[in-house]
Amino acid sequence: MNTITGAQLRAGRALIRWSANDLAKAANVGVATIRRAEATDGAVTMVPNNLVAIRAALEAAGVIFVDANGEGPGVRLKKVHG
Image (cartoon, rainbow, N blue to C red; front, side, top):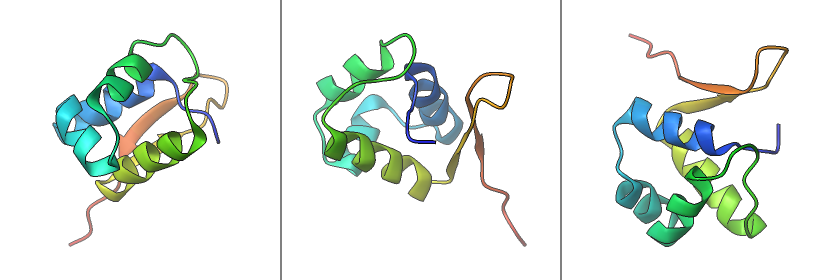
């Protein structure tokens, strides 16, 4: 899945208990970029490099983006082993 929705960004941040500032810092983007993306209904549109960086930061922190597969897109946390 290449697209991310504003709801997925908000939910992903909530799962790992990050503020918008935390995500902005981890992705090396402005906090305004995060806030604009999260306010979007549906798929976010932004500079592709920013989207890649935001997704990578969330994934590195344990967020998995789930495809729509009939129920709508979502997020979940990686399983912790051990």
